[in-house]
Length: 357
Image (cartoon, rainbow, N blue to C red):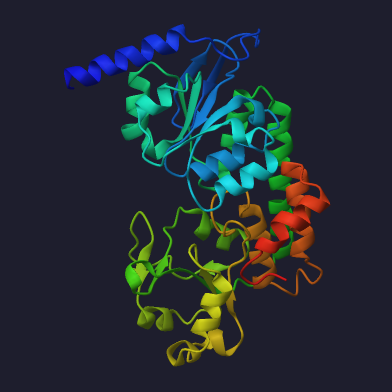
């Protein structure tokens, strides 16, 4: 490490030690938290200056804001795109007081905010996490990638915010909906289902399937579908597939995910393509634009429970004849983020996309 860098880090640590901390009043006894990587993290008290940053930030930030305490205790956030800042500004009256870090912010910029805790995704532990830990700053890692991890990581945040009761309440909200779907589909046949990520990066169109352990695959399974790409040779991320392979799979239902465009527009375009018109799922009216609002609901963001509910309704419309996704979304935002009807109608409803009313 260059001498100038060492001196800079030393100066940052000195400033952090000398700077007066906000909310210096007693915050309770020391706490010990086991994070998603199995690490034991000891904190002298409940953290009052929390920074959330790194890749996949919106998944952590949106989960953190399931807790009322987040508004007061989060002092810095990375910029994750996908509408993160817009949504958080709607639910956090103190959002304007927070420091928004650039997507490439390093340990020095994070240390300058004098955090008493930094929360990161596990997969940046060896890169960004290691440099932050080297400065002596406490770091807690979470995953928020699968339904099983959600319950565990929400419990971790409950310890961070000193609100285990809220963590239990959130977990119950999710589990009750999962259980309801499982009960409804327990004896029904599983449609052969294909979920595709439509990517037009670089100007050329590509279709991709997710790994077996990702949220998207597990959502199909939980919703009562058979993910027909399971037997394919898959990588650790989205795996590109050809139209010939898509045709060979001959899915009963095809779901199109898009992160850069409204999936409804993508599906409308595919329906005009003669190659897609030849697919049985398209002929039978089973080509679906995955639902979303500010975010596509297939992602491991708190909204994944809406995606699961919507997906089950599409795969098994006979089992969910009265499903009203607008009502489901209203309940979700009211219960988990405290949004009233007026705020939902003004801010969330206009962002609906995909196959939604």
